[in-house]
Image (cartoon, rainbow, N blue to C red):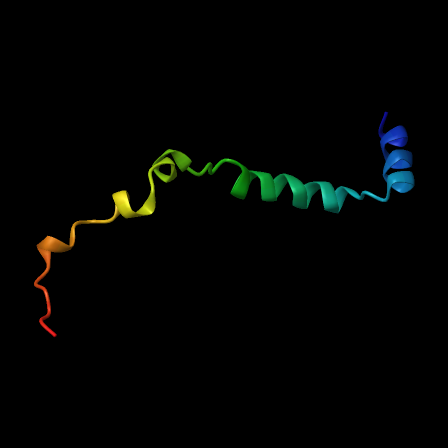
Length: 58
């Protein structure tokens, strides 16, 4: 079975090193999912009210 895997890697151009790097990248970046539910609201509704900060007079 390892021999067949080696032949496939040679034909496809994928090495064990590449597969290992891919697996590491999936561990690091694949598990973190963005929560886009907050983006369903328009940005102007997500902002804090400006009334909490003092206004400048022009």
